[in-house]
Length: 212
Image (tube, rainbow, N blue to C red):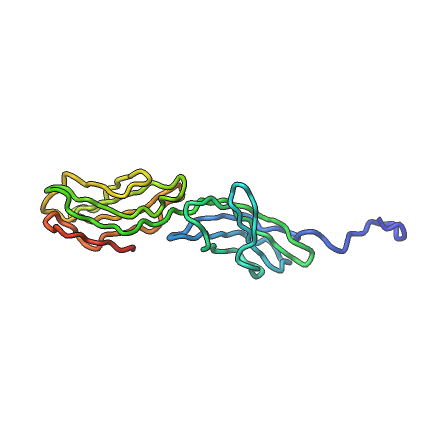
């Protein structure tokens, strides 16, 4: 209160922008990134910047540097697999910064590798792969999908964590089969690995797969 002028006076520095952003969302994007989007409600901001933390315990750190004014999107590619992150967006104007939104997201598991298929028995194939998530606590189920040459839909075979092989039995000896494999958690699946070609029981070799 200014006693000389008989009126209230505002301090020269106001903390935070006049209006904050809203509607922040975080979503995973295969093969392994997190995309943040938000609504910019400001007309006087100088910049935005994103902070990230492991969800428990929270300890936010700035990532990605300063984003230009009117920014509404940020992609985080420096992340670990099957990890729960919290994000928040800060808006800065000439008078300071304010936290204007927060979101959490669970990142995708690692993509399995080295998928191969070989004959196991007269009517069985053995599908094998490398478990790339074995050192991650609580991660993750695998999903093997099989499609015979005459089928239009893939048959889904859920498998528990730490699985590295599956014996596919009671197959037809003159039918070609395709396989693809992915890991899956509550956020979804990274890109699957698919076999290179139709695999028949008449072929006693081993076909290696490539990521697609």
